[in-house]
Image (cartoon, rainbow, N blue to C red; front, side, top):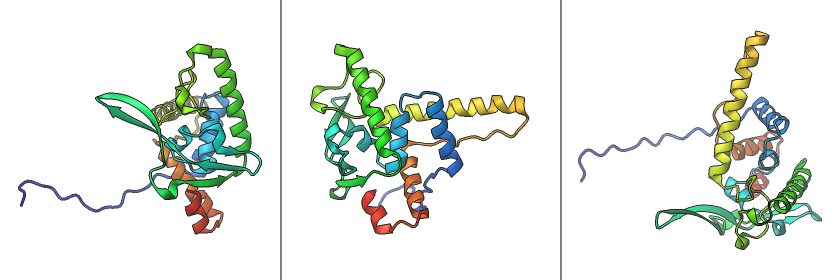
Length: 211
């Protein structure tokens, strides 16, 4: 028996899903503003990959011949003796091991990212920050360190704030009602991709296996 314990309500958490207009506006904005993570966001919207999975994606996980991405590991951020560190781990469940076919422009954005990463690695030289044991991670920061979930979430928040401020300023000149993007987190992109596939009448079992 316990005194003063509040039993939480078993209320379902509403999943944030971007509208088509939000998605289009967001992707156009990151492309036109030359955001470093432009390719990463496009691939996330096209595949529904978790942020840890896309951060842990390596060159060997991509089959450009048969047009598949193989999810084999995830980049996790953990604390060891109070020190934050990163490690490449196996997916959280057996079902998380999967093959994702190239949808839409997936191949285009993967190739653009690999080309951009290789150019950055050559330019940075010994300042490249990804540990050798991580192999060739496809996605990285502008200094070559892994694009972990904290990095992506921080950039995502900055993109939304910057866009919304610009939309507000522009509305003062045009007199039109500004269009705002609601606050979002990386997992929203996964939810959005799932709903998009559902709207296209993709077999639910296929969607489940892809995600």
